[in-house]
Length: 133
Image (cartoon, rainbow, N blue to C red):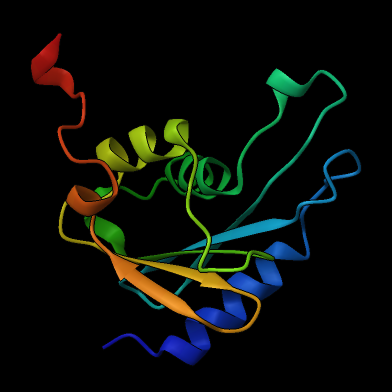
């Protein structure tokens, strides 16, 4: 069972790690592992904008780089200062569709603690995958 308040606090703390001097748009993401640990990610900008990294991919790549795999993931959360619960960009949706479990709950938060809980298929129907190669 996911403690939604704990998940919110963890992703809120991840957002504080953002390096976003250009957009001023701080985003945090966390993967909750089945062992109870959280892997944090935050958006990291660069003056050459295409070299920036979104919080979602930062968290996912960090988890894999630490030796965790898709089988270790229990929940995924994203937060930003948005009117409605935040929505990930297309690139992040594509990465999430391949590197997160198909049945994982994805919690989209805003700073008002509003949340929308979705799945990969809701996030990116008809995703491009390895079978399309």
